[in-house]
Length: 307
Image (cartoon, rainbow, N blue to C red):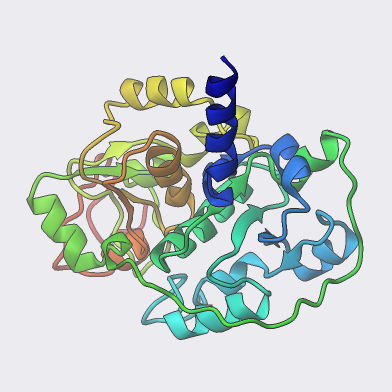
């Protein structure tokens, strides 16, 4: 018996720290509190700068959500993934290097905040980063659990960050069309009005959805529209109720790749579908191109008419 116990102890001591402290893609406030002082951990706050200055997780660094996307006014690439070199500079300036474990913290006011964190999570996956997680419930859940918050600004020392881009995570309009033609499952995370084609993002965009798409509003992923994810079992039931699979090729989209980041995160990070992908340009790109198909489920008046 003593020999067995000694061997067991030897095995535990021989497990590399990274293995012994495996990080899930979704962590709660208790996990973060227990791991906050780990030297490789970096807490990434994505609030607006003025909100961050008032309250944030102790030691967190700040990069507002808007910095993780191109300008919505850019006619060529609105609200999409910025150039890799720009992201490398941003991340390195936050004191995050390639060995860092990153925990992304939104404010936690609702499903939209959770979607923003999921979108930043996707960005790190595109860059080929290793351990990265989203704080379930965001800063609100952190404070409600009785944990302290900090005010002021953290000024991290710049480090080198080098992306190892995972091109398989990137879906363009062309690759989305290829997957559509090949029979991949498409999931529309927009509101029902957008899905059926009653209204659209702008006059430059045709109303409707990508043909054959299933509909799963992004805020259904969270509990009562909050910033807390439903349990894996509840998500499986929700996907099944909407006719959406939990494995196989899947493309998630919305209007600008924000809301769909949450349905994608549920499929990819929580339910483990490694073939799920987020279409960055979504209908903001797709619906502006007349060569790409759209279906309008409800049409109240003739095309081009005002009604």
